Image 1 (cartoon, helix red, strand yellow):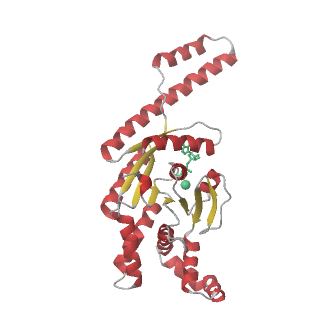
Image 2 (cartoon, protein in one colour):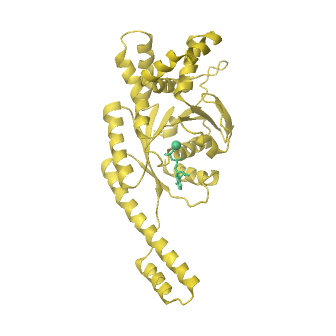
Image 3 (cartoon, helix red, strand yellow):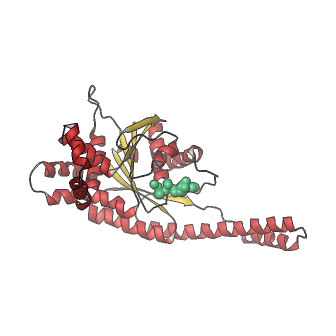
Length: 314
Ligand SMILES: Nc1ncnc2c1ncn2[C@@H]1O[C@H](COP(=O)(O)OP(=O)(O)O)[C@@H](O)[C@H]1O
Ligand SMILES: [Mg+2]
Protein backbone atom coordinates (compact mmCIF):
# COMPACT_ATOMS: atom_id res chain seq x y z
CA UNK A 1 0.00 0.00 0.00
CA UNK A 2 1.36 3.40 -0.97
CA UNK A 3 2.33 5.74 1.86
CA UNK A 4 0.15 8.50 0.44
CA UNK A 5 -2.95 6.32 0.51
CA UNK A 6 -2.87 6.48 4.27
CA UNK A 7 -4.46 9.20 6.31
CA UNK A 8 -1.80 10.01 8.85
CA UNK A 9 1.98 9.98 8.46
CA UNK A 10 4.27 10.68 11.39
CA UNK A 11 7.89 11.62 10.77
CA UNK A 12 10.11 10.82 13.74
CA UNK A 13 13.85 10.75 14.43
CA UNK A 14 16.72 12.18 16.38
CA UNK A 15 17.17 15.97 16.47
CA UNK A 16 18.80 17.50 13.41
CA UNK A 17 18.65 14.48 11.09
CA UNK A 18 16.16 16.15 8.74
CA UNK A 19 12.64 15.45 10.05
CA UNK A 20 11.30 18.86 9.09
CA UNK A 21 12.97 18.68 5.70
CA UNK A 22 11.61 15.19 4.96
CA UNK A 23 8.13 16.15 6.24
CA UNK A 24 8.03 19.13 3.86
CA UNK A 25 9.29 17.04 0.93
CA UNK A 26 6.70 14.33 1.65
CA UNK A 27 3.95 16.94 1.86
CA UNK A 28 4.94 18.45 -1.50
CA UNK A 29 5.21 15.02 -3.11
CA UNK A 30 1.74 14.02 -1.88
CA UNK A 31 0.24 17.32 -2.99
CA UNK A 32 1.72 16.76 -6.46
CA UNK A 33 -0.34 13.59 -6.59
CA UNK A 34 -3.43 15.66 -5.97
CA UNK A 35 -3.78 15.05 -2.24
CA UNK A 36 -5.06 17.78 0.03
CA UNK A 37 -2.29 17.83 2.59
CA UNK A 38 -2.06 19.28 6.06
CA UNK A 39 1.49 19.47 7.40
CA UNK A 40 1.61 19.76 11.20
CA UNK A 41 4.78 20.93 12.86
CA UNK A 42 4.67 19.92 16.52
CA UNK A 43 6.41 22.20 19.01
CA UNK A 44 8.62 23.52 16.28
CA UNK A 45 9.90 26.93 15.46
CA UNK A 46 7.81 27.31 12.28
CA UNK A 47 10.73 25.97 10.29
CA UNK A 48 8.40 23.98 8.06
CA UNK A 49 6.43 27.07 7.09
CA UNK A 50 9.56 29.07 6.45
CA UNK A 51 11.14 26.28 4.42
CA UNK A 52 8.02 26.24 2.26
CA UNK A 53 8.17 30.01 2.04
CA UNK A 54 4.93 30.87 3.83
CA UNK A 55 4.17 33.12 6.75
CA UNK A 56 3.42 30.85 9.73
CA UNK A 57 -0.07 31.17 11.23
CA UNK A 58 -0.89 31.21 14.94
CA UNK A 59 -0.39 27.84 16.67
CA UNK A 60 -3.40 25.63 15.98
CA UNK A 61 -4.57 27.64 12.97
CA UNK A 62 -4.31 26.55 9.33
CA UNK A 63 -1.82 28.68 7.45
CA UNK A 64 -1.85 29.67 3.78
CA UNK A 65 -1.68 26.99 1.10
CA UNK A 66 1.58 26.55 -0.78
CA UNK A 67 1.74 24.15 -3.73
CA UNK A 68 -1.27 22.28 -2.34
CA UNK A 69 0.07 22.03 1.20
CA UNK A 70 -1.42 23.76 4.26
CA UNK A 71 0.87 24.20 7.24
CA UNK A 72 -0.16 24.24 10.88
CA UNK A 73 2.00 24.68 13.95
CA UNK A 74 0.78 22.69 16.95
CA UNK A 75 1.90 23.70 20.36
CA UNK A 76 0.87 21.73 23.45
CA UNK A 77 -0.36 24.56 25.64
CA UNK A 78 -2.23 26.24 22.78
CA UNK A 79 -3.90 22.92 21.94
CA UNK A 80 -4.91 22.52 25.57
CA UNK A 81 -6.31 26.05 25.73
CA UNK A 82 -8.23 25.39 22.49
CA UNK A 83 -9.67 22.20 23.91
CA UNK A 84 -10.73 23.97 27.10
CA UNK A 85 -12.35 26.57 24.86
CA UNK A 86 -14.66 23.85 23.59
CA UNK A 87 -15.41 22.62 27.10
CA UNK A 88 -15.64 26.02 28.78
CA UNK A 89 -17.61 28.14 26.35
CA UNK A 90 -17.64 31.40 28.33
CA UNK A 91 -14.61 33.23 26.99
CA UNK A 92 -14.09 35.60 29.90
CA UNK A 93 -14.21 32.74 32.34
CA UNK A 94 -11.88 30.64 30.24
CA UNK A 95 -9.27 33.40 30.09
CA UNK A 96 -9.43 33.75 33.85
CA UNK A 97 -8.87 30.01 34.18
CA UNK A 98 -5.90 29.97 31.85
CA UNK A 99 -4.30 32.99 33.51
CA UNK A 100 -4.65 31.52 36.99
CA UNK A 101 -1.75 30.11 38.97
CA UNK A 102 -3.76 27.01 39.65
CA UNK A 103 -4.09 26.26 35.94
CA UNK A 104 -0.37 26.82 35.35
CA UNK A 105 0.36 24.51 38.25
CA UNK A 106 -2.07 21.92 36.96
CA UNK A 107 -0.57 21.93 33.46
CA UNK A 108 2.96 21.64 34.82
CA UNK A 109 1.99 18.84 37.19
CA UNK A 110 -0.16 16.79 34.82
CA UNK A 111 2.70 15.42 32.76
CA UNK A 112 1.61 14.23 29.39
CA UNK A 113 -1.46 16.43 29.26
CA UNK A 114 -0.04 18.74 26.61
CA UNK A 115 1.16 15.79 24.59
CA UNK A 116 -2.27 14.23 24.85
CA UNK A 117 -3.91 17.44 23.67
CA UNK A 118 -1.47 17.64 20.78
CA UNK A 119 -2.35 14.14 19.62
CA UNK A 120 -6.01 15.01 20.17
CA UNK A 121 -5.63 17.99 17.87
CA UNK A 122 -3.93 15.86 15.20
CA UNK A 123 -6.71 13.28 15.51
CA UNK A 124 -9.32 16.03 15.19
CA UNK A 125 -7.72 17.32 11.98
CA UNK A 126 -7.40 13.81 10.54
CA UNK A 127 -11.12 13.20 11.12
CA UNK A 128 -12.35 16.64 10.14
CA UNK A 129 -14.97 16.84 7.43
CA UNK A 130 -16.33 19.68 5.38
CA UNK A 131 -19.58 20.88 6.96
CA UNK A 132 -21.41 21.13 3.63
CA UNK A 133 -20.14 18.22 1.54
CA UNK A 134 -19.32 15.85 4.38
CA UNK A 135 -16.02 15.11 2.59
CA UNK A 136 -12.84 14.80 4.64
CA UNK A 137 -11.07 18.17 4.85
CA UNK A 138 -7.65 16.53 4.36
CA UNK A 139 -6.65 13.49 2.36
CA UNK A 140 -3.41 13.29 4.26
CA UNK A 141 -2.09 14.71 7.53
CA UNK A 142 1.70 14.68 7.91
CA UNK A 143 3.16 15.24 11.36
CA UNK A 144 6.66 16.59 11.80
CA UNK A 145 7.36 15.30 15.31
CA UNK A 146 9.78 16.83 17.80
CA UNK A 147 13.13 15.12 18.49
CA UNK A 148 13.27 11.46 19.47
CA UNK A 149 12.31 10.99 23.12
CA UNK A 150 9.56 13.54 22.84
CA UNK A 151 8.32 12.32 19.49
CA UNK A 152 7.53 8.87 20.81
CA UNK A 153 6.20 10.35 24.04
CA UNK A 154 3.33 11.85 22.05
CA UNK A 155 2.51 8.54 20.46
CA UNK A 156 2.55 6.85 23.84
CA UNK A 157 -0.08 9.14 25.34
CA UNK A 158 -3.33 7.85 23.85
CA UNK A 159 -2.64 4.30 25.02
CA UNK A 160 -1.60 5.56 28.45
CA UNK A 161 -4.80 7.59 28.69
CA UNK A 162 -6.87 4.65 27.56
CA UNK A 163 -5.32 2.42 30.20
CA UNK A 164 -5.68 5.07 32.91
CA UNK A 165 -9.40 5.63 32.47
CA UNK A 166 -12.16 3.13 32.95
CA UNK A 167 -15.38 3.32 31.00
CA UNK A 168 -16.50 6.81 30.04
CA UNK A 169 -15.93 9.64 27.64
CA UNK A 170 -12.15 9.91 27.91
CA UNK A 171 -11.79 6.18 27.51
CA UNK A 172 -13.95 6.17 24.40
CA UNK A 173 -12.05 9.07 22.84
CA UNK A 174 -8.70 7.47 23.65
CA UNK A 175 -9.91 4.20 22.12
CA UNK A 176 -10.71 5.94 18.85
CA UNK A 177 -7.30 7.63 18.74
CA UNK A 178 -5.45 4.37 19.50
CA UNK A 179 -7.49 2.63 16.83
CA UNK A 180 -6.49 5.18 14.19
CA UNK A 181 -2.83 5.18 15.21
CA UNK A 182 -2.60 1.38 15.20
CA UNK A 183 -4.29 0.84 11.84
CA UNK A 184 -1.71 0.13 9.10
CA UNK A 185 -4.25 1.12 6.44
CA UNK A 186 -4.49 4.62 7.91
CA UNK A 187 -1.30 5.41 9.78
CA UNK A 188 2.43 5.01 9.24
CA UNK A 189 5.26 6.04 11.53
CA UNK A 190 8.19 7.01 9.31
CA UNK A 191 11.75 7.15 10.53
CA UNK A 192 14.41 9.62 9.49
CA UNK A 193 18.10 9.13 10.19
CA UNK A 194 21.52 9.90 8.86
CA UNK A 195 23.87 6.97 8.22
CA UNK A 196 26.13 7.58 11.22
CA UNK A 197 26.70 5.67 14.42
CA UNK A 198 24.60 7.57 16.98
CA UNK A 199 21.53 8.30 14.87
CA UNK A 200 21.52 4.73 13.55
CA UNK A 201 21.64 3.28 17.07
CA UNK A 202 18.80 5.54 18.16
CA UNK A 203 16.78 4.71 15.09
CA UNK A 204 17.15 0.97 15.66
CA UNK A 205 15.85 1.47 19.21
CA UNK A 206 12.99 3.64 18.02
CA UNK A 207 11.90 1.17 15.36
CA UNK A 208 11.82 -1.50 18.05
CA UNK A 209 9.80 0.70 20.40
CA UNK A 210 7.27 1.63 17.74
CA UNK A 211 6.75 -2.02 16.87
CA UNK A 212 6.87 -3.72 20.23
CA UNK A 213 5.78 -1.12 22.74
CA UNK A 214 3.54 1.27 20.81
CA UNK A 215 2.33 -1.44 18.44
CA UNK A 216 1.99 1.05 15.64
CA UNK A 217 2.68 0.47 11.94
CA UNK A 218 6.04 1.61 10.59
CA UNK A 219 6.22 3.25 7.16
CA UNK A 220 9.45 4.07 5.35
CA UNK A 221 12.98 4.63 6.61
CA UNK A 222 14.47 7.83 5.20
CA UNK A 223 18.25 7.82 5.20
CA UNK A 224 19.11 11.45 4.81
CA UNK A 225 22.15 13.55 3.98
CA UNK A 226 24.00 10.72 2.29
CA UNK A 227 27.46 11.33 0.92
CA UNK A 228 27.61 9.40 -2.33
CA UNK A 229 30.88 10.52 -3.88
CA UNK A 230 33.75 8.09 -3.73
CA UNK A 231 36.91 9.40 -5.38
CA UNK A 232 39.61 7.13 -6.69
CA UNK A 233 42.59 6.85 -4.34
CA UNK A 234 44.90 7.46 -7.31
CA UNK A 235 43.06 10.71 -8.16
CA UNK A 236 43.43 11.99 -4.62
CA UNK A 237 47.09 11.01 -4.58
CA UNK A 238 47.60 12.88 -7.85
CA UNK A 239 46.15 16.01 -6.22
CA UNK A 240 48.50 15.72 -3.25
CA UNK A 241 51.42 15.30 -5.63
CA UNK A 242 50.36 18.30 -7.65
CA UNK A 243 50.21 20.33 -4.47
CA UNK A 244 53.67 19.19 -3.42
CA UNK A 245 55.11 19.96 -6.85
CA UNK A 246 53.47 23.32 -7.24
CA UNK A 247 55.74 26.30 -6.68
CA UNK A 248 53.00 28.93 -6.46
CA UNK A 249 51.63 29.26 -2.96
CA UNK A 250 48.09 29.94 -4.24
CA UNK A 251 47.98 26.91 -6.49
CA UNK A 252 49.54 24.75 -3.82
CA UNK A 253 46.83 25.79 -1.38
CA UNK A 254 44.06 25.06 -3.86
CA UNK A 255 45.37 21.58 -4.71
CA UNK A 256 45.77 20.85 -1.02
CA UNK A 257 42.25 22.01 -0.24
CA UNK A 258 40.69 20.00 -3.05
CA UNK A 259 42.66 16.88 -2.08
CA UNK A 260 41.63 17.22 1.57
CA UNK A 261 37.96 17.74 0.72
CA UNK A 262 37.95 14.81 -1.69
CA UNK A 263 39.50 12.62 0.97
CA UNK A 264 36.96 13.78 3.54
CA UNK A 265 34.07 13.18 1.16
CA UNK A 266 35.29 9.67 0.39
CA UNK A 267 35.63 9.05 4.11
CA UNK A 268 32.04 10.08 4.74
CA UNK A 269 30.86 7.96 1.85
CA UNK A 270 32.55 4.95 3.47
CA UNK A 271 30.98 5.71 6.85
CA UNK A 272 27.54 6.14 5.28
CA UNK A 273 27.90 2.90 3.37
CA UNK A 274 28.80 1.02 6.54
CA UNK A 275 25.86 2.36 8.52
CA UNK A 276 23.40 1.93 5.68
CA UNK A 277 24.33 -1.73 5.74
CA UNK A 278 23.74 -1.86 9.49
CA UNK A 279 20.37 -0.23 8.98
CA UNK A 280 19.29 -2.81 6.45
CA UNK A 281 20.46 -5.61 8.72
CA UNK A 282 18.66 -4.28 11.77
CA UNK A 283 15.55 -2.59 10.44
CA UNK A 284 13.34 -4.44 8.02
CA UNK A 285 11.89 -1.42 6.23
CA UNK A 286 12.05 0.06 2.78
CA UNK A 287 14.92 2.57 2.72
CA UNK A 288 14.58 5.86 0.92
CA UNK A 289 18.03 7.27 0.29
CA UNK A 290 18.26 11.04 0.21
CA UNK A 291 21.50 12.68 -0.92
CA UNK A 292 23.27 15.41 0.94
CA UNK A 293 22.61 18.51 -1.13
CA UNK A 294 25.25 21.17 -1.27
CA UNK A 295 23.71 24.60 -1.13
CA UNK A 296 24.56 27.85 0.53
CA UNK A 297 21.09 27.91 1.98
CA UNK A 298 18.76 24.94 1.92
CA UNK A 299 15.52 26.19 0.36
CA UNK A 300 12.61 25.32 -1.89
CA UNK A 301 14.88 24.33 -4.80
CA UNK A 302 16.65 21.75 -2.65
CA UNK A 303 13.32 20.59 -1.28
CA UNK A 304 12.09 19.93 -4.81
CA UNK A 305 15.19 17.88 -5.53
CA UNK A 306 14.34 15.68 -2.56
CA UNK A 307 10.70 15.50 -3.69
CA UNK A 308 11.86 13.99 -6.95
CA UNK A 309 14.01 11.39 -5.20
CA UNK A 310 11.09 10.49 -2.93
CA UNK A 311 8.66 10.21 -5.84
CA UNK A 312 11.01 7.79 -7.56
CA UNK A 313 11.56 5.73 -4.44
CA UNK A 314 8.10 5.24 -2.95
N1 LIG B 1 19.40 16.22 2.22
C1 LIG B 1 19.95 17.30 2.80
N2 LIG B 1 21.01 17.91 2.25
C2 LIG B 1 21.57 18.98 2.83
N3 LIG B 1 21.14 19.52 3.97
C3 LIG B 1 20.07 18.97 4.58
C4 LIG B 1 19.41 17.83 4.04
N4 LIG B 1 18.39 17.50 4.87
C5 LIG B 1 18.42 18.39 5.88
N5 LIG B 1 19.41 19.28 5.72
C6 LIG B 1 19.78 20.37 6.65
O1 LIG B 1 20.03 19.82 7.93
C7 LIG B 1 19.55 20.66 8.96
C8 LIG B 1 18.57 19.91 9.86
O2 LIG B 1 17.42 19.58 9.12
P1 LIG B 1 15.95 19.62 9.77
O3 LIG B 1 15.01 19.12 8.74
O4 LIG B 1 15.66 20.95 10.36
O5 LIG B 1 16.15 18.54 10.92
P2 LIG B 1 15.19 18.16 12.15
O6 LIG B 1 13.82 18.65 11.84
O7 LIG B 1 15.28 16.67 12.24
O8 LIG B 1 15.79 18.80 13.36
C9 LIG B 1 18.92 21.85 8.26
O9 LIG B 1 19.83 22.90 8.22
C10 LIG B 1 18.63 21.33 6.86
O10 LIG B 1 18.63 22.36 5.92
MG1 LIG C 1 12.56 19.96 12.95
